[in-house]
Amino acid sequence: MSNTDDADAGWLPEVKELNRRRKWAEKLGGADAVKKHHDQKRLTIRERIAGLADANSFGEVGKLTGNGQYEGAQVMGVTPAPYVMGLARIAGRPVAIGGEDFTVRGGTSGASRRRKGGQGGFVEDLAHHYRIPLVNLIDGAGGTVTSLRGRGYSVFPGVFGFERSVELLGEVPVVCAVTGTAAGGPAGRAILSHFSLMVKETAQVFAAGPPVVERALGQQIDKNDLGGHEIAVNTSGTIHNTAKSEEDCLEQIKRFLSYMPQNVWELPPVIETDDPVDRCEEELLHIVPRRRTRAYKMHRLIDLIVDRASTFEIQPTFGKAVITTLARLNGNPVGIIANNPMVYGGAQDAKSARKQTHFMELCDNFHIPLVFLVDVPGFLIGQQAEQEGALREGMRSVFAAARLTVPTITLVIRKCYGMAGMATCDKNGLDLKVAWPSGEWGSLPLEGGVAAAFRKEIKSAPDPVKREKEIEDELRPYMSPFRTAEAFEVEDIIDPRETRPFLCRFIDLAQHRLRTSLGQPLKAGVAP
Amino acid sequence: MTDVEVKSEVTGTIWKIEMKVGDAVDVGDEILIVESMKMEIPVMASIPGRISKITVSEGQPVEEGDTLAIIEAQK
Image (cartoon, rainbow over all chains, first blue to last red; front, side, top):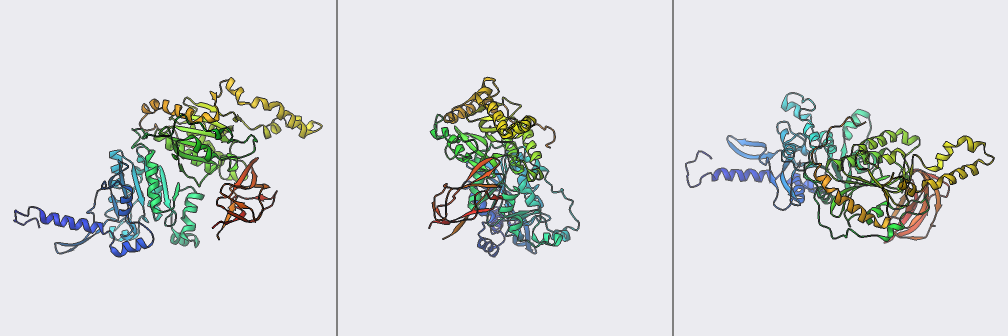
């Protein structure tokens, strides 16, 4: 105790108590709770942090926080607060990192220690003040009504609010990984991120879980049918990516951060690559079938162009008519947005538009240049598409494209039609538009377009089918991309094989623009 | 042996069936073509194996997520 007069011992008794208290913290919810957690094939929060952080880099903050048990003045033990956090390094770069400890009260946010938690908690302030990425490892059910009794009153929503979470989205990369069942606050926290992911077998995300749903709607439903990855990732797009295991989840977090700057005031990291800038691929000359109605593999096309094995696809299982992937060109991070002709011919539906909008905003926020590989016949049409709001979501992506500030290049691979085509160009910037010889564009395709514009003439012809075909044939030569290049409405037509050298040159030249455009985005109106 | 269902990514019409029951397939082989949004969209095998069933016929309309064929996976 501190009132000892033993000068030789100095403060050793207190240091011993400190070490005892640290050990209690490391025991989390106790051996039984940890074993139960492990039996469910789940890692503890300390194991998760150890798996993410560089060796010996974790500097914990708030390790002593918890509920002490005392006999008189003597402390007998401390139940740690159900949240572990601190500073660490990932691939040498500092991050703020934290997550609920499920082995203590299921990770529920306790009344008095709320400040230590994820939402509005200290870990967010660390990220904000030090301007470093935030990694949230979410494994908690949020608030609990049991805290009512202890506190004696009901907390107003927003007192421990999302203000800081929202602020961070314009400052530093935020990654949220859902590693267990997340409902309420923690589920909401997961969505206020630049990149969210969930573990396939063991995570669920929903506004409210099965007991609350049954009480409110009389609906009996399994937690995976309500918020498993098939729903939350593949169907609703609430969460971006699925991880096949906890280990894969940690790898994806590292991978995502490897493309990101530390904050919006810095540039993303450029790495060395041994992939030659002038690599030309013969396969690209043949990848687009001459038959205009025949689909092809856009994923393959991307792989042939970017630095080898450099892609990291965001939302690969949602809104699949467009592919959004981080990648590198000559070691520089880029965002690739490519229409996928394999899914509805690449027509933009509500889901793919939403995905594209998010990805454009992500790259713009963090100074990552965008490359559009365009093959879009237009917005998806038909009753279902209209019901899902394809037009509104599509126009949101046009709006987001028009606000882009990062250098952008639009490379038309095949089709570029209508308003969906507009969403692939940055109208405010240099707006560099180039095309492969297979490129074709316009307000709408000739097929259908002719039928609509020349309806009277076709109808009154002796052979309407023949007349429609005649008009199409008459207009088709004007569709040649070379004619548009003559008019300087596309700046160039390139040999498909030379795509990689062309894009690498562009991205290298854009570095000065990036370097001199750092900082936070300006507020610009209201997203529709 | 595990059976893997080959599903349609899109709503459309079966335009052409290129394989028959019993045919061996490898990853990426085209089994059939669905026509959607005026485009021919090939449906490919995701695993090596043998076609054990084709559940659609040419000209038949299909919905997104419908099973089109079944591959018996190679051991």
